[in-house]
Image 1 (spheres, rainbow, N blue to C red):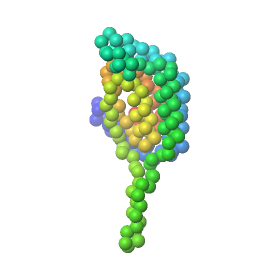
Image 2: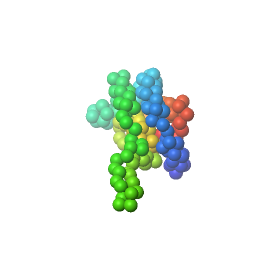
Image 3: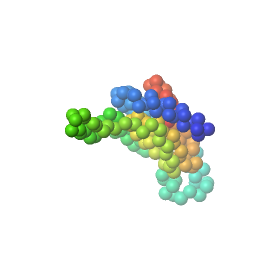
Image 4: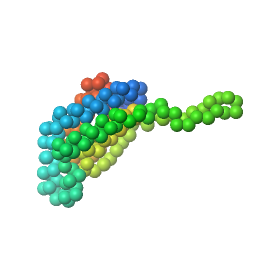
Length: 173
C-alpha cells in the first residue's frame, strides 16, 4: 500500500513541479475558503477524535493540541493565505558565478519531489504541511497520530477535492 502511494505521489510531484505560481496560489486560497466552508464536518470529525482521546486518558495538553474549533480553523485558513502570499521558491536563483572560461553557473531552488511527514496529535499540521508542500512544488505523504485519524481524514478529503477542482492530482497529498 505505501509503495503504491509513493508511486502515485511521485507522479503527482512531477505535475506540481511544473505548476505555475498563480495556480498554486489559487489552490491555497481556495483551500483556505473550503476549510472554512467545510467547518461542520471537520469539527464533527474532530469532536469524535477529542471524545475518544478523553476516554483514552490523553493529557489535557494533548487534548488541547488535538482540538479544533472555529477560531483554530480560521487560523489554519489564515496561514494558507499567508503561504500563498510568499514568493514561489521554485526557480529562484540563489547563487551565480562566472567561470574563468566565461561559462555562467548558477544554483537555483528546485522541488524535492515527495516528502513524508510523521507527526502527532495536531490536525493543523496536516494542512500546514500540505500547503507548504504545494507551494514548493512537492507532493506529501502524511502520517498523523492515530488520535487524529478522523480529523485528518476530513481535512485531507477537503485538500484532495480542492486539488482536483483545480485539475491537479489529488495524489499530491
